[in-house]
Image (cartoon, rainbow, N blue to C red):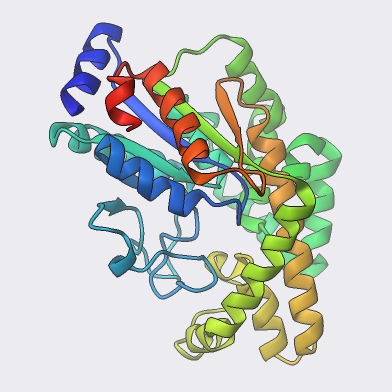
Length: 334
């Protein structure tokens, strides 16, 4: 089976790269395991927060004992006080993908951080747009003095498309988008769109699968997931991170679940209000994820609607993958 992937890659001249994306709580994890088992994959986490050690519950990190022996990469590779950027993700993937292929396995990115996944699939190089450390420091100071919303408003004024995709709490990416505008005079969203319109060819033979479902059902599942995280000990996890000295202003602490619970622990809000805010922010985040992925022209959408048989859903996904990577369809879907 893996020999067929290698043959397909050789015929096309580009190595294969499989990706499964979709909003939070849509069901990527379970399907990714089944796909990885069937196609002989190693999984690369495409989640910007699962890279951090000790941040397990709030990031919905799959425990090692539940990974069915499938190798997972880019999980627990940074301490929570260390930075991790899209450039870091690109560099790691560029190292990992040929290593995975050398073992006769299929590289398989799974996650919901659209910028990370797309940047690898299409070889974006945001660092080519330059950098300005003093500007970043000024914007960080502005955010501390004026607040996260004021910083987000600043981006919305010059790049509304990028602002619409970023939560006001995502200060690091907001500042980077502002920095790109400052150094190039052009919005990040415009530069991304130009890359697409220029017809840039991916360095990989791509098979991109996106999961979606009815919005009301997705929101219900998000609420259930948040309740489960709280039952599993999310408050204790955040309290432990803070007790270990992690600043509530750290980039990792801006992740969904951590910022809201940190505010509750600091006495800035009550528990019920923090939970309500977390559920609302997660729903908004899922909406932004869907908006991002819908711009990816090569994405093959699969509806995971309630009532769909798991066997039918998996067969549909198998057919999509086989259409991109010419396996023996009867064999892989059996």
